[in-house]
Each structure stands twice: as C-alpha cells, then as structure tokens.
Image (cartoon, helix red, strand yellow):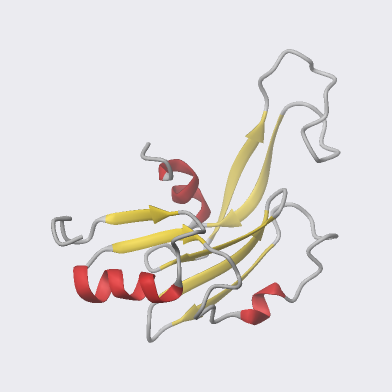
Amino acid sequence: MSKMPRYAQLFTDRFYTTPRLVELCFERHNCFLSGTMMTNKPGMPWAHLCNFDQLNSQRGFYTWAWEPEKNLWGIMWKDRNVVPLISNRYGVTPQFIERGGGGKYKTAKLKATNVPYGRYRFKTGKMVVPYNKYMGGH
C-alpha cells in the first residue's frame, strides 16, 4: 500500500473487509476502501443493522449506520440476498440501479424473483453503485 497514490480507492470482497482495515487504510495510507463484509467479522460495529425481516423484505430495502468519529458508513442492503457493505468514502444517499434484460426468452422470469422479463429499477445506497462498477478491476 505504500506505493499507492494518495486518496486511491480500493474495493475488496467479503473475505478481506473489516472495519479495522477500512480505518487503517485511511489512517496510515490515505486510501479509501469500500467492500462487502461478513457480519461475523471482528469489529462489526452495527449489529442492529441485521435486525430486520431479511426473508420478507423487498429487493432494494436497506438500513444504514454511520460512525462520524471514524468516518465509516455501513449498509445492509437487500438484493437477491442481504449484502452488508462498509465504506469510508461513499455514503448511503439513495441511488437507483437497473437490473435485468437481455436473453432470448421474453416470457422468462428473472432468477429468484417474480419480476417479469425486462429491465427494472430499485433503490440502493450510494456505496453499492461504485462497488458494483469497480469490483473486479473494471
């Protein structure tokens, strides 16, 4: 990390991301970090984020928390599954993303949903959009 430019943005998957790593990236290296996270990682500061009906929530539902002294944003977002994310750069301002479309069978239902074929939009927090765009090196 010492060779990274200042204020670089890193994206990590759930096996590497912890709240302490997010803090250290900025404290020691002036780098931002956003990533998905396992809820059982040490230092998961927002246990109350998991306290919603995860099975019956609509796709696009999310809860969030912020620790101002550490500048950490956490979000628990319902896509097909519940996705916990953490970031020290992107907040949780509502954004919309589009999913679906493509394929050759217009009568098909989208996987694991009752949504008919075609594009559809649903709400998410701001940190999900750059994570989906840049995770994997795009």
